[in-house]
Image (tube, rainbow, N blue to C red; front, top):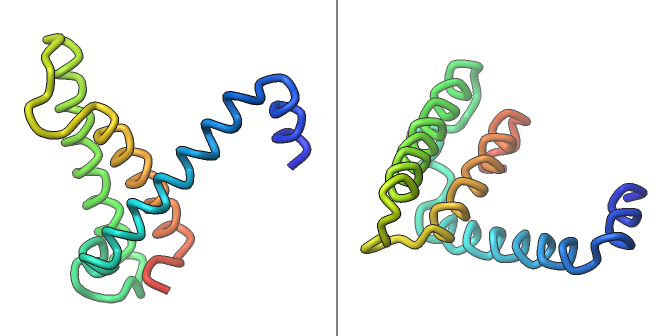
Amino acid sequence: MKHTNEVRKIYPETVKEFENIELDLLELFSKKQLDYGPRNISMGTPLQTDEDIRLALIGLAVRMNDKVSRLINLLIKGAKPNNESLEDTFTDLANYSIMALIVKKQKWGK
């Protein structure tokens, strides 16, 4: 927390917004977990082996790649998205990244 407190003193609004976004990310993650549960990431089985974890990470990487490709396309074209906002895309990427870290730490679905 030492670094956080130092940065909070220098950039209080930035840190507060970061914290607000973290809460928003957790709320969206929670809503989706209630809808889908953890098995959508774990390919329908518990993550018990290194291979299970590898497949789950590949699945997350594919989802992230799809989001990044869409994002780059929209930014290059300067187009307005028809369905999902850029903010939605950034939110999904952040949550997928956190989910991948949870999978790597073998805490997914526990």
